[in-house]
Image (cartoon, rainbow, N blue to C red; front, side, top):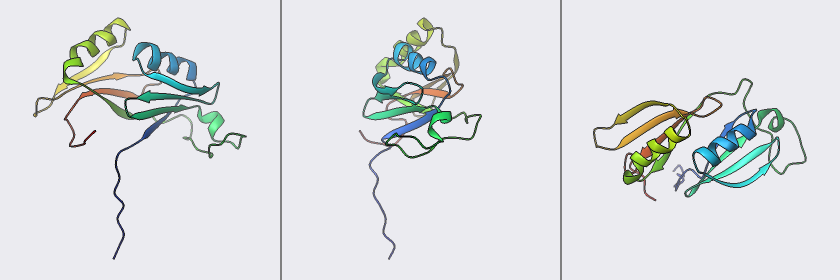
Length: 141
């Protein structure tokens, strides 16, 4: 009989950028995530509700260092990825205002068949970021 693991959630999402300061400014000052820690030129760690968004500079994470972290990264140029940050339904309009106030262009808005909504935009590295309202996916807190 094959063992199966039961997973609770994704704890962290990692993205890569050579421009950590620009990315930190975007996610902390424009989007409002909480800075947990950073190592200049290597990484920025941000809190997203009950999860973490980690931003690594691949130039400095693909080589051996004195860091406690293993070697990892993406082949240059870094891949552009997509991830979603869940928001409360009542914060949907406010999130559009925050994006507008920070001159962040909304690429697309979608109302899903269940009535939930998504807003798509790009971060400074080109990653596709989504604000998605609660209950779009069958996941619990």
